[in-house]
Amino acid sequence: MNLLYANDRRGQYPDSWYAATATPQDRHAPLKGATTADVCVIGGGYTGLVAALHLAQAGRDVVLLEAQRVGFGASGRNGGQLGTGQRVEQTKLVQMAGTDHAATLWHMGLEAVGLAKDLIAQHNIDCHLKPGVAWTASNDGDVRDLHAYAEFLRENYGYEKIEPLDHAALQSVCPSPDYRGGILDMGSAHLHPLNYALGLARAATDAGVRIFEGSAVHHIEDGSKAKVQTDAGHVVADHVILGCNGYLGGLNRKVAARVMPINNFIAATEPLGERIKDVLPRDVAVADGRFVVNYFRLSHDGRLLFGGGESYGYKFPDDIAAKVRKPMSVVFPQLKDVKIEYAWGGTLAITMKRLPYMARVGHNILSASGYSGHGVGTATHAGALMARAVQGDGDGFDTMSVIPTPAFPGGGVMRTPLLALAMSWYAMRDRLGI
Image (cartoon, rainbow, N blue to C red; front, side, top):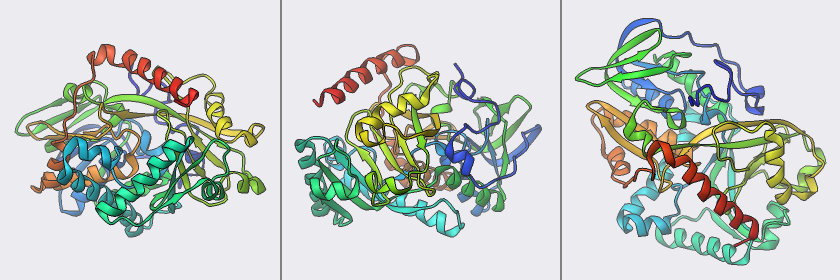
């Protein structure tokens, strides 16, 4: 199944609230015929756009190929949460990678958030950037764990931007009967993800990047110069950057064995008006501690944007709104009668260890993907790291690439049903409160 086209119309953004409120941008023509470049970037999400922008600013001739539209994939559909750190908590990273490497990864995570904020400011990207992400827990033990984690970050990294929230404090942030407490990280932020991607695309174009939409890549011929083939043309380049994430398909087997696409779903309610005070009296984003995470925030026009609902196949369900309403009603039973005006799905990608997979997968081919739901900052940072590596500064990219990333059991045939079994088990544990 080709996920580029399995659930979406060719050349069209999904019917999301993001697409309905995005800053308009002219369509880029598809690639036709042969061309050359210093660097060919494949994928028009955050990773590819940031890599292309940085390389063009450094004087490189860059072509970017996007199969659909820039920001079409997870970069234009996600929950809009720009979180600090890595996808895996620092306490676990210490166990996985050791104290020193874990500290380096923490500071790289802060660099990722800073980079995204700097790009938004430098290029005047109107994406409604606002501070604050809360992590919540539904039982007292998990609340204690979150508070201990905030103290760990303060003691070990001097991070003072996280506030522990007891039950009463959390209720003043998010009055959900499902949550017992949590932490609030004011160093994190939230934004309109599609407008962020479109702003990066405009900045890249202004810097000289040649963007071609509707230009799906079906083959890469490695060599001293790589040849990147589409249906209607090809690019010969000194370097290739893969920024395809969940839409990689079979373009590179090494990456595909370690990075698995999964689907997630978001709904946008009608504007809540006075009911906002019963949902999010503080305009921060929220993510809970379930294995199948619920995440939500307010839109700039007063809607609740709520993401949740597990899916075990690659086809989107017929009624996405109903799938999302189920977990939303657990978190906010007071919204059981609210109207849902938009509902959409998207494909992201995960790895076994929930850390990104960055690798040199050919003579002159770099790849970064598998952001595991932490992609707004991490994908932005990955693009910059690959741009630096192309220019000869591979320290940051190599720091990420030494993280062991095992292949999924069963390879491409069995990995999806095995993941479905695991997700079913953890979803059941979430429902039972185990």
